[in-house]
Image (cartoon, rainbow, N blue to C red; front, side, top):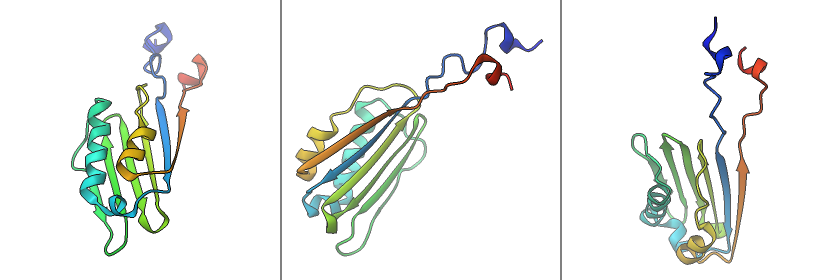
Length: 136
């Protein structure tokens, strides 16, 4: 007999996690071009939320007036950042497979990038299956 039928379903405690999508506009261009600044911010997010980096982060500063792209693979999922100095704009995406407290995106992006407007969207990713569907 399948063990899962007896209440030990592998997905029984899975909640899906939380995804944050952050847009910061009206930013100062210089910090958006600064690879170390972006990396420092990403490391703070990871440390503050007690996330675990898997392998080496992939980060790239585009030449000249270009921005920065950063991708952190996490055991909890991922953190990505893209900056656009020419548009005074930065985006972040953080997905954690387990619930985490909100991080102070608005305050930190206003302080670090001098953002005039920060929009933080939070999406709860929930598994919605019936018991029968989880056994397939």
